Length: 112
Length: 114
Image: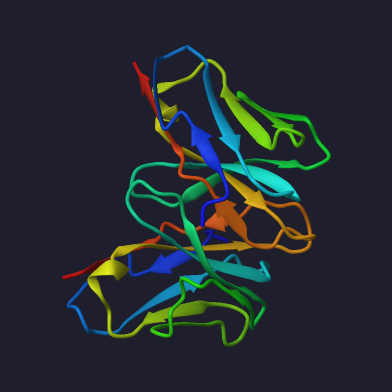
């Protein structure tokens, strides 16, 4: 079963704008990860945030985690047409982060 | 290392036939995972290995599905007596454990059962 729920399901913005995607989950986690998937391809790992972290940055990506609300957000700043993809959050439950449970994803379209 | 490799990329089979997929993980990664993804959905966990030991199987993995990782390197996923509902993208991923690392996914095998 899916642990996470992403919001919105679809997002369309103009190049240069920021994109924010949200993820909610149900149970306590070890870490939360964000992945990108271009159409028909495998997933690419973007960023991992541990349960004891609140914010993390990687290039144009900013991830926040609120364990009290069981939610996370992914912010992509200064978006580019190449950022067009599906974005998934995934939670790792076990002590060493065994398997991941994915949400249903947000489809981001960045218009040139 | 060229990452996680999956073969074949596409497979079309008739209902009732058996199919086998192969995954070659990153060589130093001790954990290997299989996921299934249908259109518009996130990946769903099937099973994972720590070296050659299969540590967990999902309830999704019916008795028609079997996975192996005989020498702790490559892995195979076999589906017997395929059904139309098996049509999906089958994704393999690997990672190094322990540690807070993300997964490295392959490009997947797209199965179509006709």
